[in-house]
Image (cartoon, rainbow, N blue to C red; front, side):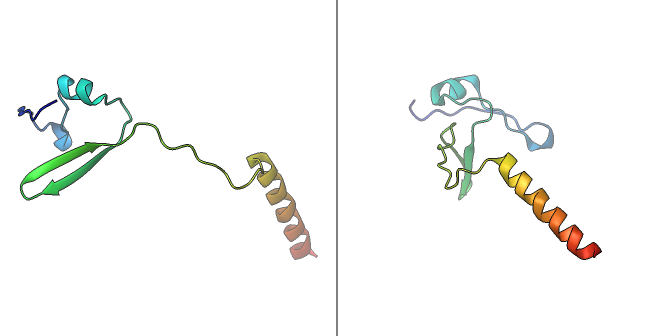
Length: 83
C-alpha cells in the first residue's frame, strides 16, 4: 500500500477507528498490538506481530505441583507457629 491519506474522526473517549482498507492491507486482527508514536505533529501507528513468541519455560514443574508444595510449606509454618 502506498502512502494514503484518509480522514477519520475521533470518537467517544478519544477512540480512533481504523478504516477497513487499512485493516485488510495490514492484516490487523482484533487483539493485535499496535505501537503508537508521536513525531512532530504526526501520530505513527506500527503493527506489531499478532502472535506472541513462543516461550520456553526453564522449569518442568506444573502449576499444580507448585500449589501442592506451597500448601505443604504453609501447613508446616502454621504448625510451628501454633506450638
